[in-house]
Length: 328
Ligand code: 3EB
Image 1: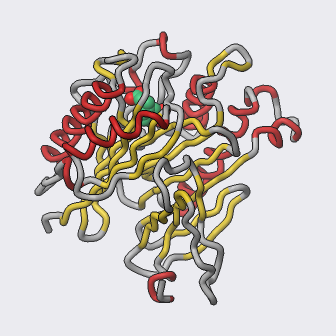
Image 2: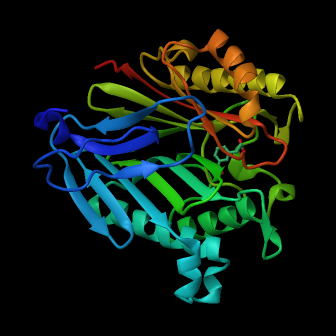
């Protein structure tokens, strides 16, 4: 990449075998995230570019870069280290301690630097469906996420960012995010109960995320669609049937797009113009899911990633990002 572009990099996410060649003279390390493994050969990098030069920064475990309008950051924390550090038991299980430390850092920087509007958070951690300390780890995560948002004076319901939470095979708790100077609009899905209003059968604290956020950034409207699954109301639909779960998930994404188009001027978000990441619990489902996804949504090559989904009966989850020129 030419230096003029490297200077504008906010963050880089690497997938599969991709490597970023070290850029001679680059002012600081690129924020570099490796999350879930790719299910197809090769590798690629997702690079978030600002429209002007970005600045690097660090705050505790958080590495970030910022432009005039956007902040991109990433935190990786080892749960075993949290435990060794012997943090206060009031911060909960080792996973909850890591999540609290990560969110403390990112919310602190977002507020101090003046990017208080969280657009999108990506959350990855091992063994998401495993039980420990008497509670499934995804549910532990939800307890810590809600508590740390409230501790920073934020809402854990309306106004929450778009997000995803996925299980990795191993490795650190990895969280990366985009935040903005200017407010975004939250979008919900009329086919689904808002996640922050899920009833207690899904855990002691509800998941604090919105179905999508819509943000004007420069001359573009950006839409960040959260991880989306085969959930109708608050219940999983089509347990055990990955093909039907894929169709229901795409129906849910279309419902979110319709809400976004009603809120955005001039709209124009369409299912065949999205950048998709498709998470599969079982690698053997790749062909079935790919056929269904690419029949309905195939402008850009979707990424297929191997990850555990946050409910044990969900086999597939799809997230989407899109931008359209905004009306001026
Ligand atoms: C769902 O709709 C499926 O906890 O941040 C999707 C997106 C899901 C984000 C999160 C969870 C999260 O409830 C799971």
